[in-house]
Amino acid sequence: MTQTPDALFDVAGKGIVVAGAGGGLAGNIVRALDRRGARLVLFDNHPGRLAAVAAQVPAATALPGDITDEESLATVMAAAGEALGRVDGAVNAAGVLPIDLADDLDTRVFQECQDVNVTGAFLFSRAAARAMRATAGGDGGGDGGRIVHLASVSSFVANPGYAAYASSKGGLAQLVRVLAREWAAEGITVNAIGPALTETPLTAGYLADPGFRRRAIEVIPMGRLGTPADIVAAVLLLLAPGGAFITGQTICVDGGRTLV
Image (tube, rainbow, N blue to C red; front, side):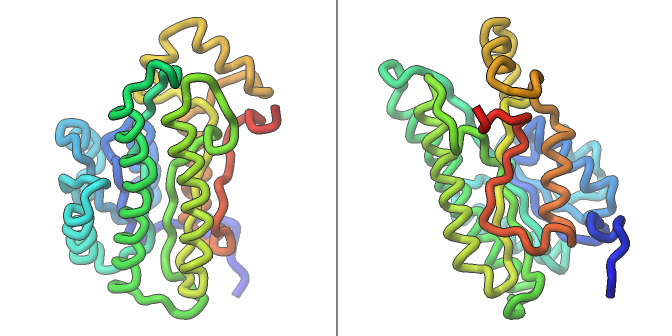
């Protein structure tokens, strides 16, 4: 049956789990999904930030959880299965952004970045895929579920000071490709969004420096930073019926940043 244009982007009734839900960009994604009728389970390892977002979407289930802890993820996904009945989508908005020149970068900071941005993404993806199978089952090519990660243009471009972050996001882009290939036959899609530098609480400290802000904008051909709305639109596409045949991709929402 031919779908109407609105149906292509409809997430109403979808059961979606959001990791790192207490983050600034995540809050925008959560509110957009809630407005469109998605059923949500939110988790974060920062209780205060999670509570602030959950207060804006009272219909959602909010749980403590750590994306780097396999047992924590299993608990969250089991609770999501019970709360939602079916896990249709999973959005990973958890991440850390350390910026420091390689000569000055603390090894522990580098490792934490890999732990959260790569290992955490792997553990989240696997837990989500298992929950999707348990609550819906792969059907050999149908819609087995949607997994969406927030990556970065740093998956593809090299900036001084980004040794930890860029290597983690480059790893995430390749992880997305491999998982998409492994799970495609089950109808589970795995994708990422690659934003250019975007105005969020995570970047606010860096962007408060006028020189940093100016340099960030100079390398974006469209001449502006990203906004949360830019990213939300791409996430909605990948969770909705219109994104059913997209998998293994890191879609750059970057104003042309990766073109220079």
